[in-house]
Image 1 (cartoon, rainbow, N blue to C red):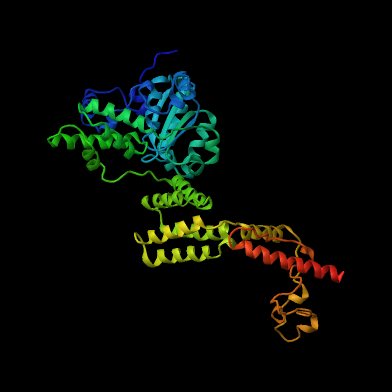
Image 2: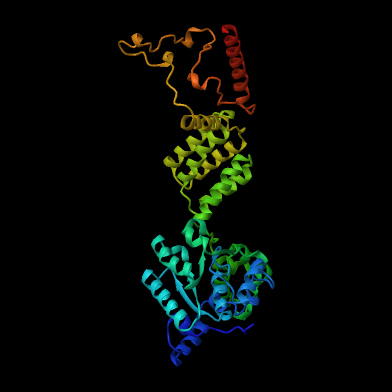
Amino acid sequence: MTAPRRRPPDAAGGRGAPSLFDAAVERELSLRAPLAARMRPGSLDEVVGQRHLLAPGAPLRELVEADRLSSAIFYGPPGTGKTTVARLLADHTERRYTALSAVDSGVRELRQVLEDARLALGSEGGGTILFLDEVHRFNKAQQDALLHGVEEGVVVLIGATTENPFFALNTPLLSRSTLWRFEPLADEEIACVARRGLIAEGATADSDAVALLADLASGDARVALTVLEVAVALARRSDEGRVGVGHVEQARAMRAFRHGREDHYNLASALIKSVRGSDPDAAVYWLARLLEVGEDPRFIARRLVILASEDIGMADPMALVVASAAAQAVELVGLPEASLNLSQAVVHLSLAPKSNTSAVAFWQAEADVRDGPFAEVPSHLRSANYQGASSIGSGTGYEYPHEDPRGWLEQRYLPDELAGRHYYQPSSHGVEGEIARRWRERRGGARESEETER
């Protein structure tokens, strides 16, 4: 295998050989750049985390070291090493390596890269690897412009994204790429990154300060190093000199939460499933997470109103009242106080007995409406509130339930084509248990009446 080597600058950015000025700039950047930039790993062995991809013998590492990587999408939260691994890929490839960012590049730049790659393929016989950072920032038209070059093999695409690619990328582009998922770093891995940063800064820190830093970073190595750099500066200005918990807390006054489009759906799903699963502790936690990251409380309230009917229904008819009241309170009171109203609703809904029978009844009836026979309204159920209705049989034979001492009577309300269909099947949970008893009695009475008629 060819020894790893750094691709020349003209392969990465279209520039000529580096000048003395360029070298001076690089030296200054190495001294002045943020700690997170200065701490970028120089080899795959220096990368912290992603052992499932980069440990010796792991699939991604094998492909990178063999220079056999095909078009790929690196997907994962910020600060997990996607861009770093892509840059290290340049050291292991004999192909041209070009890097773009979707933040400041458009179709024009992309087409130029593809044209250069096509010319290089014809004149030199060598392929081109295109690293496209923040690929999810490209719109559909921009992604379509890239697709042709990937399909033909003019370039091998390495796209990096923090967004779920199934949401953010065109299906044709995704289907032609291998998806590699980068996971958030574990606390011990963040602690390892922090200790390396301390060595680079020539500083020391208390173990509990490093532990706090790892917790605050939420799996993001870049956040950890950024906070550490500030904490070291604060410690040096104090008498202690050593980084302590207080310095870390000062450096990061608020915890950094990542919250992209996928997180929006995942947190909402966790809240709904926790309420459905009758776990008020988990439900309140996910509610707090949603509010902390800035989710619209009206969105949360709407989800709770839906859940009250879908997952609780007739087992606790008051659930819909409680959820609707919380939604109204959000409009009337607003945050932060409305968080208490939402919490009360979440606890009530979590502890309520559960039944989805009314929802299932509707779904089954809806299916019959769409797929079943087109049934006419029975004549006795038709409107009779107009002159001449009786002459055509509308309303004839209808029996008024309030005239029966029981308040109900045996009468067919479904059309003949659906006679005998039972959509609502009450459960024995909560209030619905009593409803089920009454329903069984009525259905039993109706069956007896039908047998008598026969």
